[in-house]
Length: 305
Image (cartoon, rainbow, N blue to C red; front, side, top):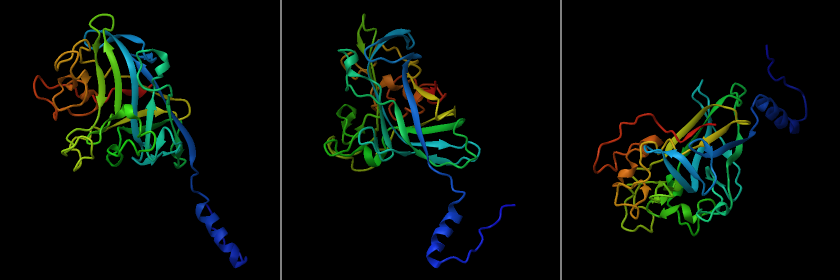
């Protein structure tokens, strides 16, 4: 049986030290963790500007020219108890700010068709404090895709990195692009631009270049969890191909190749009908015509590699 801390007749000045040592002797220590991500397209490693085969309902070629996204509230989820243990992010001044991180997979030097910058970031780094009962070599990692509302609408000109990335900004009212994947369906044929841009909708306000006057009715953030995860050795694959599985990427349903290419999350964007549900979200806010998706399988963009 464990013995209680004994009283020792020591000097009064030493008492606080002894009390602190006694009360914290069993407290778990913070552990450094690095959650690694790898961009893929249809299971193949991503390189900006490269063309990938077998995408969408027609099995078309797809050239991907940008691949970036925001995540926040990254945590370890203990399935046995339901307790969440937040990963406190390293404040690196570039990729991580408070509880938000940006993943940037494209290198603009890889191809003349690439957008973005030459810098890349493929991991989230921080510290987590868990009890001994939580096995970090076989656990569940969860995170929310997007930017929290209190940071989504701040001015790009005064925002700290990574929220100052101009290529990830729509407008103050709508906020950031949570996911930006730019691509071209059948690049050697119809050469149809087909993008996936996820962001908030239903943001009230008269000006697009000012913060919304009230909360957005459709935040469009979603949680992704990866189980059986070893925080030291495992990698989270990020692959848009399963998200595009219900679309013909050689066609835009809203006016052809020059109008709203692909899914832009808008309320009248029919290309989002099959995409938004495959991110684990409901697109009922945006359907204006056609048949609603019957897909109910949850998000398919993130998985254990």
